[in-house]
Image (cartoon, rainbow over all chains, first blue to last red):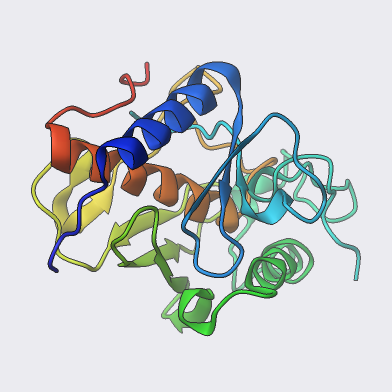
Length: 60
Length: 169
């Protein structure tokens, strides 16, 4: 795979989202169509819930 | 068919008593063979997968296949600009045993990656709720979401050399 890296701003946003998810249980939103990163939310609607990544148990 | 509860994130549904496997029953569940396993599959896992697939590009939908006594979910995720092919295996003892997820797309060797590009997602025997798989709360879509988060970490690690989240305990 030809890896295409995130640009600086994209990386900053994703790091903040991951840390907000781990530390504050802030949901990460996945784009409905292609699962790309679509921001974060404190609360998620019924429509968003299937694509909202809450603080998941994980070994990392 | 009763749907799982919607009072939590999709992958972490709080399951209605009539549709989830009571804790005392969990150890006897065989997903494809036992009645309890089939009930779990039909009333919990399949509806959640269908909901995940609604409105999603076909290339990113979850596809199900049987592999012996296991059920395999095949799907793609794209946390950044790169598309990864993945496979999540629900073994016969699922949901007592957590799902196993591996990335089929070649990755660079990195932290939290096991043999066969299996993702290290849950710590067996952990007493911390943030580190362990809970069969009464989670579904296979939860594993897909955990894989997304792992891949997001991988994309950052690839650029920076640092895993952006701390180790679980």
